[in-house]
Amino acid sequence: MVDLYETILGQVRIFMNIFFISMKYILAFIFIILGVITLISLKTGENKQKFSSYQDLKSSDSMKKFKIISGYMLIVIGMGFLFNYFLIFLYLILPQDGLLGSFVIQIALNVDIGEISFKLMFIELISYVLGFLSLMTTIGIIFSIYMLLQPRKSDKAKHHLGLLISSLIIGILFGFSNCFKYLL
Image 1 (cartoon, rainbow, N blue to C red):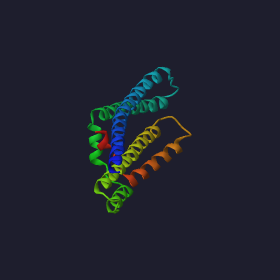
Image 2: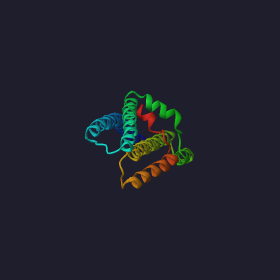
Image 3: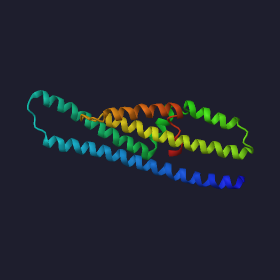
Image 4: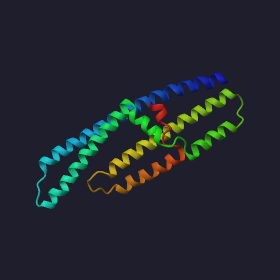
């Protein structure tokens, strides 16, 4: 019976490793593309814009600076995901375990399941689930902050704020940086 669980966990481990490594490169690609699109939209918007007063020119200059800074920041974050320096930085500053995450692992350690190897496999599976939830939380927070900082007026701002709040709650419950050990 333990051999069956070991083979299942081995397959889950392989799948989760492939999933997290592919998500690392996908996220790096998305951040770099978002940064490039932000910088390109600055250039195309600059050519189309006509100013009617000095106030429009002044607000446009501040918007231009904001777009330049955010575009380059997205490219730096994408390169940080690609070369691991941003992942290591987030892993060091964000809390490791959430409230429910450490509680679930403590319950799994205290429950008498049977063999110790089965208990360790179960805890490793819980760790992968917590890593997945942490990754979805990180993606939700970064996406909602990016969308909230966009200069255009949007009716969907309350949806992005709701995504940010729900991602923060899930991060507090299950931990923010559980995924970074799998992404590295």
